[in-house]
Image (cartoon, rainbow, N blue to C red; front, side, top):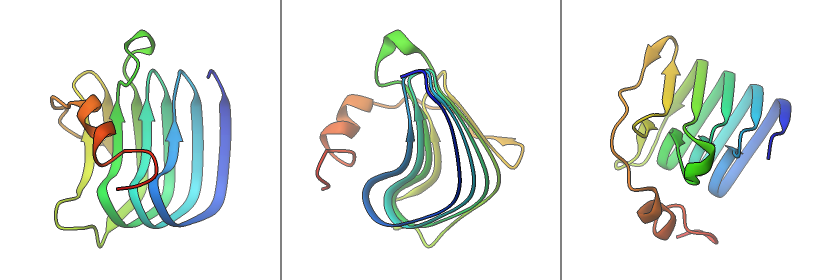
Length: 131
């Protein structure tokens, strides 16, 4: 909660949930990140900001990037992604999902926010312990 984190040159492999997860009004700057197999590549939630640069996100099952509210008291989240490649995802996976009120920009292009049932996500694709 309220953390400021910098991460660089990290490889994530076969993560059942989220490779990067920033929450509760924290800020993370991440550079040179590789994700090879995850539920979600990177998530920002609950008033947090993730600035992600020079990343490769491969083989996700749900989404490459997600920004949403899990705890309403913290508010919306934001991801600013530059030079991020999302590839070889499952057929049902999406490159980026932003809940209404939250924001994701991918190489300067805003992802259109949409209604998202976060409680349902945590009962299914983001369930602790995997699927």
